[in-house]
Length: 344
Image: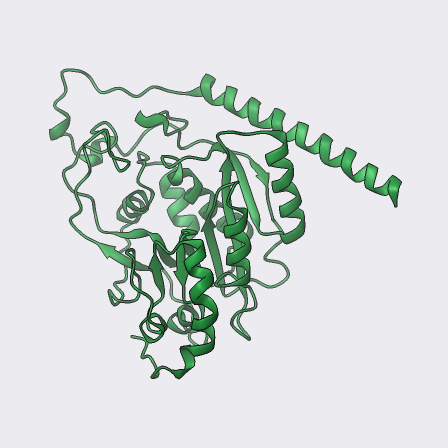
């Protein structure tokens, strides 16, 4: 046993050094392959249409150091997770390396793959490379991945700006490794998800919808032009005055075949640092309309907990880990005492 443990440690050590080399090499390749895109100083950017900018060569470095499209490599992957049977629902959960406690809670609560009897649910946490990367951090992620088989990671820098890249990684994974799934949901980690009600809403008893995309609909939103804002969108990235309709990033649902369509569209249009808006731009490029759902179902704001109120919705945003732990058990025990909720 002692020898076996030593062999395991040696193997993990070699693997981590290889991953570090790959990450460093990818970072260097990024720097070498960047193509700076600058608008002429004489150009009136306010009058440029988005359509004039959507066709660009691959491997682009945009303002804010957003690098997309680019062929990022999987550092951690679960290519066989959908075998032998494709799931009804894939949960694509945005996470970061240091959010171990959050991942643990989600696995036990709304991300529990056995939560809805008779319905196959699959959970994946989406990660990039942490800014403070160390071999020890990556070693812990490798161990966690080997234990739970629910982490995918690519060699881009994990940052708010790069949420676009992280979301595209999730769509790429579904299109490559789980194209026969029925539905997928991209969701943030600081969420309450009523998984059972989501399954009821999607309804496994009916044929899978196609070209389906739904969530909290946002219309007529304007770009933030203040460089101090975390939502800052430079004119160089998006010169138009309004965004097209899109679904709020905290949580949206789509038929699984949409993953490839959106991912493919993302390779030929100008990337933007607001990932939910960028997905909306991809839908616009595809000519696919968002399916509007009742506004009360998908919430991207905080809602005070009340069991019967939560029983009739799908998502609530800004739910801290401690709060999720406090309400989840009560919700699971008490939700059936509420009046039957009609799904529209």
